[in-house]
Length: 456
Ligand code: NAD
Image (cartoon, rainbow, N blue to C red; front, top):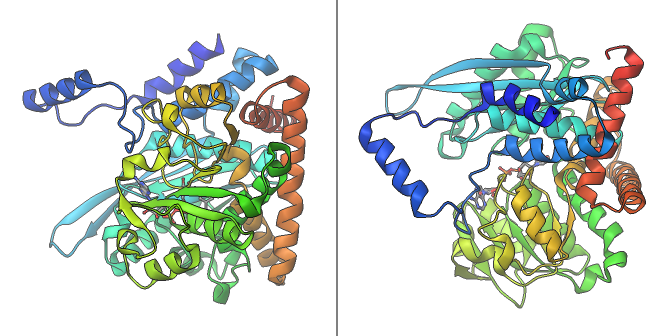
């Protein structure tokens, strides 16, 4: 049953409706829907991130035989806060953004999760990401629960001064439910070490200097060495564990990156250090390819100096929609959710998908890719490196003691390898894929913690 019950519970709050109900808008929306129900290759899927996570959660619960009542407990978030963020922009108007902080499950420790600034943020997306964090921290074995936050502002198109106002205003409004032993924030899309510094500073005005309130801070403000690279590095550690079993040698590997931001560019630069070759890459501005190799370091420097990806001379501009069909060994989604879907999965020509992004693959695409024997290292384990080094940063902050980068990276490697081995052993035992196995492992650990505490 729980499938239906769970759906009913979340649908009651989760249905998306088009805000514009004028006859023209309704007709246009209908025409669009009828024209082609499948998303085009470069678009995001119609299915929401919440539906994607719910599908995988339910599948794992079916296998675990988790009862209907418990399934509702572990699916629905513990606490949801929505806040209003009004801000006057250079056009002279007050723009009202919505901010969310959702604490999904805290059985295993304080809530932990990033804060995303993106116009497509909505409460369902934050719910999905918060739930993923619960399973991810459990799979990695770090003592945290799962949370996520977001503001639906176009931060990449705003002045830094306005982004700062939004970051401070958001913190002012959610600080009551945060705390270094309650809920700890971190960066995500369009938020970085600078944004974390503003948030820490704002929290400190009310509570005194509290570096452990956010992770992913600048090194100058008690950030951890290795945190910025951690998610991309963790993805590469996972790939290195998998490679020998797949007959791949990292030095001879070709790869494509979708989304050249923090996760994508670090994963690319570390893959390149191992001798691998990047043959295609995209970001929000477009895509380029070069079968002879695109220099990941030079591209990073070019973008850091204000250049756009498509102007980079080391590659040829191509339609972003065709990126997914470039032949390669490893495809690394590192942008938004739902970008690998039934409209492009069948044309993918890679051996491995290394999910740096959260929820990049819809259930329909997952099935198509499994039928093609593509090996998927899923988000819930592949991109856990960020939260693992966030955990190290938090531990260092609580001790007011700093580790050097080698120590951080070594400890990260140990945890990522252990998670890979535990999940892949479970996958082998049960004859299932890594995604289902990682959800099984994550859900079991959370259920055990809740049971031991006496919650259920
Ligand atoms: P970021 O803002 O640094 O980078 C996002 C990149 O995606 C940018 O280069 C942007 O231009 C690009 N992008 C946006 N829309 C795109 C599109 N339609 N097509 C291609 N590229 C597009 O964000 P990030 O921190 O690197 O996060 C990327 C993904 O990784 C997200 O799904 C995030 O949830 C996930 N993630 C991040 C962390 C972390 O530590 N930062 C940890 C775990 C998971």
